[in-house]
Image (cartoon, rainbow, N blue to C red; front, top):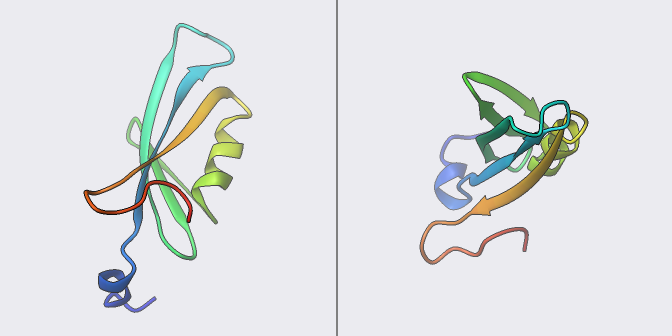
Length: 81
């Protein structure tokens, strides 16, 4: 990816949050950046890389009741177009 492409199509900010399936009193929240060809998620100092935010949500959902929220800058649509 050419770094100048980020000026035209900036990454989308998202959050994945929820509670552990093993301990419902253990909430978590992570944030990530979704690029056209991959997404990166950070939770508690650890990070994961996958094809998309939805793919990261599916992986996190194996161990947690997880939810995905796209966070939008002013003037930008929230979520997939």
